[in-house]
Amino acid sequence: MTKGRIISALVLFAFLGAFFSVYQFYLKGKLEEYHNDELLKETLLTTLRELEDAFSGIEPALLKREWRAGVQPWHDALGQRATYFNYGDWVAYEQPPKEGQILKFWYDEVSNKMVWDFNEKALKATGNYTAYPPDIRDNLGVAKLEDLQTYDLTETDVIRQLAGLNYGMEQCQQLFDAKASSVTDISIWKMQDKPEHKGLLSIQTMGVAFTMTMKDFSNYLKELRLADRYFSVEGLRITYPYIGYNVEPQLQVEMLLSQANYMPRPEKQRQGRAALRKTSNSDNDGSEARKKKRKKELGIFAKAWKLFKYYVLATQ
Image 1 (cartoon, rainbow, N blue to C red):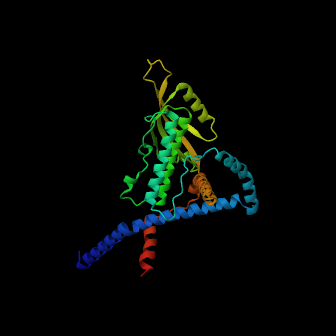
Image 2 (tube, rainbow, N blue to C red):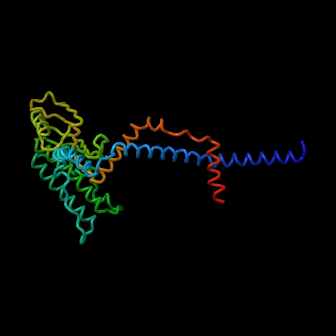
Image 3 (tube, one colour):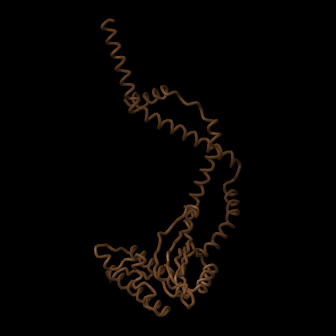
């Protein structure tokens, strides 16, 4: 082999090595992006053609009017049923001051007063100082002043804490009104937004332990079932350890009670989500048709050469 041939072979191998390196570390990723863009383009064109075929010759104003005529009865029914899902005044709270008082000290004063008023009502209902939590904030996880020494309290924090405190106290008051002889423990669970509710309902569950006679407990469950807003008993455990006592049985009840609150989305957000679901369904239905219409893909070296011309030669 002559020296010229050796040099030519080395140059060829060097060129092939350089080309392979460029392909492996640069063009390969670009080819994948190009392939995905081609698929996206074909998908969008197919969807556009399907929409043109489906709505050909239809006036937008007429279509919109017919759609509203069909949706309005459902919308009205939703509005009527939504009134059933609410927390009532259980999350009511006193509005924080805008100025003139330090927010942290104002919160301490208001929350202490709420606890004091609750204890007075609970004592009047049960006649027993040990029949209810001495400071219900400890059970509900509501902050007290000593918990906020190193915390920069905001108005949002105050609203959340006071709403949670009032919610727990209203639950206890409901039990006292139903003739519970004691409320031994109470806690609020994290609010849930279940996927099956499509973001329209928030579920608030509370765990509570109390004592009550069988007759009063039966009446309490009946009141929950016939209430003008949504209540759901998610879990229930009943024990009666004092079976030998010659008194009316006081059941020890542990219960998970849930309420739901309707949270309507803004009109634009609802329309956007509906359009997104419709587009997604259309894409799924037309996937087989798009596969049949898709053009034959370019070979790997043809794609590499096309990208090489665009990104290397054309940009020089």
